[in-house]
Image 1: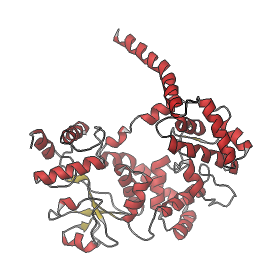
Image 2: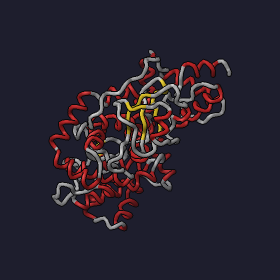
Image 3: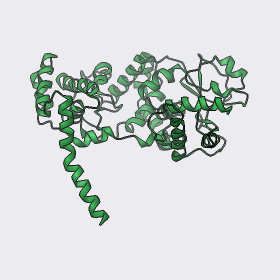
Image 4: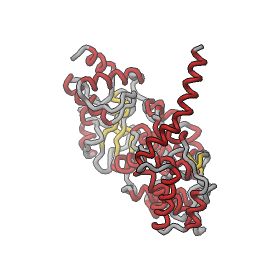
Length: 403
């Protein structure tokens, strides 16, 4: 009986959802239906100088897709995993070995990129592997339909409307056809999952064939990614992430991406590189992705300015940066001293208790974001606990006790 009721409810929601979505979105789009709104898009595309031929080729038969909206409004539970769990899965040995093989087989391309953009092969290859498994998994959805749907949807039309025009410009330039534009639900394209505007702004014809094809041309994809990284401020010949060993003498509240110190200060506090080399380079921040009991890194401007702009998820960015160091010859990282980590349920409890104290931790989701870390640090300082900005059993117990 419960299974039958669940089926009826699911069917009702499925039948009703598109009508509700259309009604809500029409209100956001001046009361216009998707078809009428798309007519306005056609007119504006012409005003932007896009050819009628490209507009017809790009928008013919485009319909609203409720499934895309459902995915966009959902969460990304994968980032509730801690850094070691996520990096073990994503920066695994198979991806490391495949990445090294790609670096060898594209040696000439990487040498030219290093000379023109200053970006090391390992940095690009790590992103390449994490984004699409080196071009092996680009997504299969209709990109134009997805982007048009999200541009009409109420959630983020200001982001996706320009993406739709960018797709039409890519078609107009002859770089890709509508049929070739296949990818994930949010409209990313190519081997590095560029949004269409990024494709337009940073794509380069690195193989010299007269077109920018970030789907089929490895050289174009790699050169364009390097061009984008340089635009974000990549500094040639500077580190991005270095694993370190941390002395108990380090003031834990200094382990914060907003706090920087010169190499001499870290050395004075007893911080040493894991590979035994001296700490060098520009000022850096200590990064403890799992608190003082887990792995420890020094994060440099290349990490903070570039990696965290590429993807704002700290877990993803550290994983990409760590994989890049491995591809450049670094040893596997230490996974910490074995102290148990709070599970997702425990982190949610911490977030709830912090919220009750008036902190803005965002959504109670078990994901340790910037708001959660900042609130934890303040409470650790107040409770005179090691202020490593990471949820611990010690902190949870103190909060539960009303301290």
